[in-house]
Length: 225
Length: 232
Image (cartoon, rainbow over all chains, first blue to last red; front, side, top):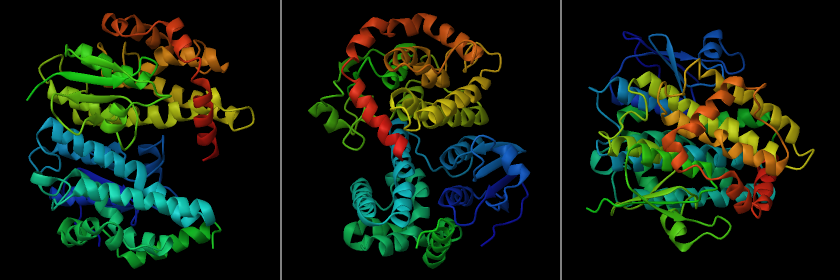
């Protein structure tokens, strides 16, 4: 699963199962940019991580010539702008770019937090999280429509990269929320299959079983049964 | 394709102000459609069904409308590249930093500030005030001796921070909690005065008394939002 060793100035401080880090790995792969991958121990964060992201102390962090860029969607946009001769994830047209940013932001604001409430909570609050997750999936289904990718004419794009890592969490959401993505949002399920076969995504994601096991570890850590 | 610009917003909202100043800096004529956030219009709900918030930008026939202030600001910079270019900096690393601090302003400054301003005593109000002040100090560090966050001229980050330059003082007066003061944040205080004195900004900076009067009935809404945030 570990990508090629570094022959450029790029270093990625990351955590293996982080969907946010995976966005960056997908973008780097789409752009065929070599980089050094550094696995961070979130229980014992390295000095380099703490110095590179003193404000939030979080992964992913991209170091380019030693200079840090933080936050996954900001990193992806940075790669777009710093490496303009590589395949782009954002289209050229300003309006289309704006809509892509809006939807990537929607995924960012909604999916992870709602998913976390699915495994952290029980009873009524969990039922609310379930209802919200269905709403999110249906909203994204409407946005995807009959397009092959969220990027539409552009092909695999910014929103696809933003949302693709969460496809490995679908199985966990399904188990926790007792629903099937294929029933609630069949177009999203089909899209998930398609992106899962894309090389940049396939080599960046871990199996749904591994993600489910990871959630089990988190639940133990937080004392949730 | 028609190019008329309409901005759905309210003068009481500093987030809307970000977009209004950007339009004026860019010299783009626009129609301002005043919204009542206590009684949201069909127009707003139609054009922002997902978040149901202002600002919303309608540019000609382009649909769906553009929502979320950061999205709109970047759009304006890209859609009107020859008019007052460079709301965002040119260098990719500087752009990444501007985007980072913009998110920081909304999540880490306004987030705790809202709880500090409006939550009841004992609902995490004091902790939120400490957090807001500490984060405003971190933001202040980004000025680093410059006149504006954007350098010599107002830029993207100044627009995003603009709420602290004018609306925050009004909220402080309404809520009774002080977060930004000259002795606590001298550089940010100085920046706030510079920002509010700018000729373009002054064209759309609402009068303080008008803000107080318009928001007199909003306090209840602010309090319930802050209380919900404090409980998360």
